[in-house]
Image (cartoon, rainbow, N blue to C red; front, side):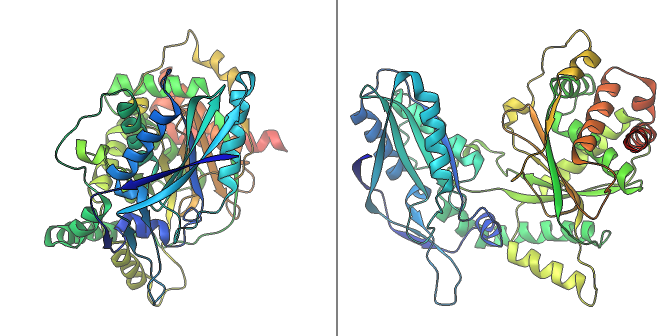
Length: 449
């Protein structure tokens, strides 16, 4: 495989502690050594020299791309920005008829490689060419350097530069070094303290355990359409509709009229944060205190709980660990949330209302459910639910000691049945969602005997 060496020189060298989101990834995450890999289509008519010039610009513009994470003498990592350096960019040759296969092969190859966080820069690139014309950039990103939202920001910046639309602002973008310094400021510490007080308020209610799991994923056009109908009708986000539905199903499984949950907060509210090429994701806690009410009445509570959780989603991870230790002192059980909910979609996709089908129940025949491995698994006692970036797939992980009579795919179907019924304004799922879900699950058990 041919390679091109690209040299760059940025504005500065810099050293700082990990930011709080980076520490979250470092602390026990299986992702810290695994790359996030994706392909980005290039504008037509670009030469290899122009693509390499854009890659050079990106390394100079975004410090997260030229950051490494060495260890101190005590074994603790820190972030180190290199002012100047060089990278080798592999050139992958493909035939026109096999471009799609070549892209998937390259992604699979790079995904298998372990990221050397101490020596490799935060983002590495490869270029796919067909008949000597570049067609795609393959981006291989360290989860410590750039989260999924940051990858979208990077993609937008690369597109803008390649198209000649990049804003030549004299003010450099905020960099992870500034984020780390902001966190250690007086304002940052006050924000963390407020967030941790809210964490304490939530955690004190739910001391629980953690175990092994089983998993499945579902592609359901009916569910996506039903969620959009309810979202539009009641004026809440599609994420809040999903959160309310999963809460009801979790409550029905657990046999409890309330539940606790963890959200993955993007922490990208301002324009500056949305353009930030780095890692900002942290967990946000939440509680729904009463699930035994009509489905539409649950929606404001789900929305408010998620908003409140997001409000307290920026905090010192080490201080949170200390808080957890303090709460669980002299206890044999650890505090874990009932379920984790991770909406991986962008806000634009998340609010995209799908076209209404003639009959949602007919559309349910198109639902596909299959067992899958390596799905999102949050720090929850019972369930981990994720909405994938394609806005079509919902995945579920169930801890094995709980609800052994319910395969993971049947729980996904319960979510679908509840939301579709509510969107169709069927009396039972709309007025009595908990009872409807319990009966649906009971029928599942009966049919399996």
